[in-house]
Image (tube, rainbow, N blue to C red; front, side, top):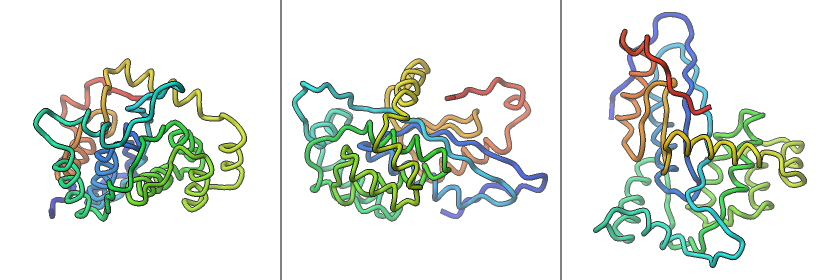
Length: 237
């Protein structure tokens, strides 16, 4: 895939990219990896800023019986698509992006609340994308328990988070209110699944696509038509 976004010849631009994702969603990790690949096509003086929006696909009740990742995956698949077929397709797609899915290592579906809270705290240091990628990789490649605070703190340390942020993660509930408020706002916008990507507040790419589609979205966001320039921008903030 050799497509590139046309070069920028004027002043430096900043492009904000909003990503709505969840850590037990394999398509969310594919989307993040595809976005990273697409950003490599940018040419010219442009800065991209990724904003992470948590959206827990599986809510948890303390009394609920645990369910497996494979049952959860089956619930999300279209009629007629089997779990083995989906897992093979995801594995093949991931391999092209440097992702090594190991679905056989996944047992009971973990809560992703603490993982999202850690990413929220990492935002203050600008390391949220690094932390999110570490969590995805730990879960889907190693089967790590991403509901465990100590496991997550270790991943945060590996991703370069400061001791102050890690202490706040372990010892307080900081970020919890932001998580709930973000999800409520997204549901109000009609979000029901992940991933979703919004480029420059104007180009929405829902669901699972490919790198070429993200390249096209980047081009549209950086070089809107005259009609788009005058239109109101959607926002996930």
